[in-house]
Length: 223
Image 1 (cartoon, rainbow, N blue to C red):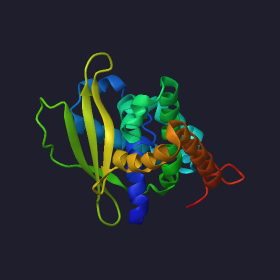
Image 2: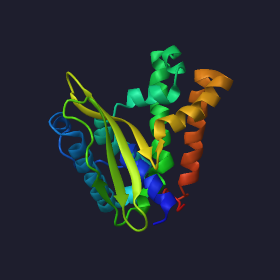
Image 3: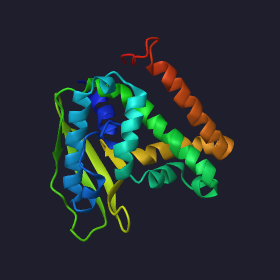
C-alpha cells in the first residue's frame, strides 16, 4: 500500500470507517482515552476486512455504520463548528444542521475509496503524556503496515453529564490537523458566498463525488 492511500485510510479511522460490532458506547465513560482509541481502531480494521460491501465502497453501508458507531464517539457538532469557523455562530440552527450533514457526507465520500485498500495494517498506541485528571488530551498513534509508519493523533475531550465519556473532535495526520485544513477551505467559500454558499458548494461536491466514486453497476471505482 502506498503512502497516499495509507494517509487516506488514517482519516477513515477517524470518522469514516465502520466502527461496527464494537462494545456499547457506555464503555467510553470508564475507559482511558488511549484504551478507547486502541479498541475502536482495532475494531475498525477488523470490520473493514470482514465486510465486502464496505471494501467495495458501498456509501450507504458506510454512512449507516458511521451513524451507529462513529457519531456517539465524536463531538461532530464541535468539529463542524471549528471547521466552519466564526460564521458558525451566525448560522441558523437549520443551517448548522445542514452543514453537519453535508460535512459528514463529504468526509465519507472523500475517503470511502481507501477502505478497499485495507490489508495488513495495525494500530500502535504511543505512551500517553497526559495526566489522569486531564479533560482534553491527545492520543498519539501510528498506522503500521507495509512501508513507513503513519503518524495519526486524536484530540479528545472528556464530556460530563449524560453520555459522559471521551469524544474525538480533531485528528492530526502527519502533522496536519484535519479541522484546520477544512477551515481554510471553507473560509474561502464563506468569504465569497456566505454560509448558504458553503452549504451549496458542499452539496455539489458531494454529488460530484458520488458520481465519480460509483460505476454504472453501483460499485465503487478503483482509484
